[in-house]
Image (cartoon, rainbow, N blue to C red):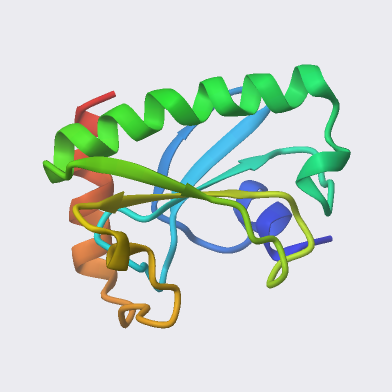
Length: 128
């Protein structure tokens, strides 16, 4: 069982943004930018391109609504999308608020501040 499945099951706390029957969205605990959110399927699948076309389409549509809420909350120019998938063997999409290209630098992750993350999650949820 991946760490993401444990988050979905409530075994590990997270700053949840939204979920439906197939997907789950929560804040990255070491964000690249404020509002950095992960979108994951509830069904474990390691590689995003092993997900069926239908499920991948549904995942992107789910992410679209979250991205709009992130943009509304943060006031960023755009929400960048990144799929890396090396650090956790569970398919996921990074949604990262950005105002310039350098805002997507994964080598500049922020320290975990759960109080700030809770406020950010609340703000994003209020825009859904």
